[in-house]
Image (cartoon, rainbow, N blue to C red):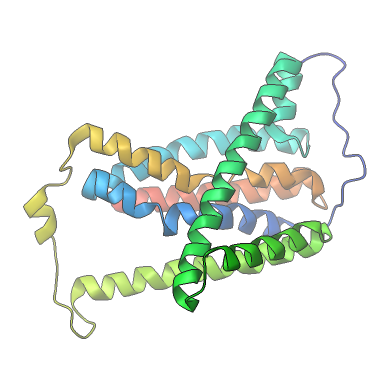
Length: 254
């Protein structure tokens, strides 16, 4: 790292706990990329989307391990932009910061569009109305104290995780034919179309959708500087997230 470069937490708040950081990382990954984007990956890769999830999971584990080490040693709200500037100079931090800004702008736009489209269908109103309401609520949450923001993220992430678990249970019941008006599916669809109906190109296309679904986990290291004990909290949060990703990516292979 460049000599004479230091990181200061400045006047940032320190209300985030380890549980906040962990659920913030998992909650951002369990978002539009999973609820809305997983169908794109399955359509492209078929059952071989499991391979794409394993590849993406291993990449995310490696990135989070390295980023977590840096965040534990030098907590900074600038995260990888700050570390890039420390290692390679101002140009690296400038590029990383602006690239991540444009990424968030596009990702937030996609998530807002998806959320407003679903709610517009539920309530039979123009799409811009729920979109405006969502933006107003999220803006108010982000302007609140960091502890309140952490609690909001924590409980809403718990809701999303509970919904995913519910989907898994319902999916297994539908697959096994237990629910009314459902028949046992088994592996007939896999035998009919093959495990990878579109070959390597389909897996590569599915990998793009999967990578988008994993996006957001890096927020753990970005928020580390606003936790009560940055070095310890970010270490526990990153290790917890890595363990969960490893379990989810290894499960299909067992």
